[in-house]
Image (cartoon, rainbow, N blue to C red; front, side, top):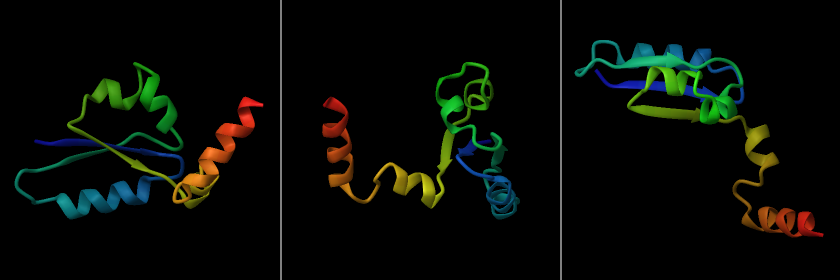
Length: 88
């Protein structure tokens, strides 16, 4: 049974519930695990997090538009400018 942990910077319960519904009855059966609210950074580094404890086959990251625009995703120039400004 493939296992996937869903993590992110926002409430992901609805997405997890939807994935569980979409994969129920599929072959092979999937186990979809909710890592919890705003746990994505912890899930990457903490050995007690769901990603490390559950040892899934896949990890899905759900990021809100707020998070993506804050990091300049979709605009590589903003990342370059930020990097230059921090080197001062």
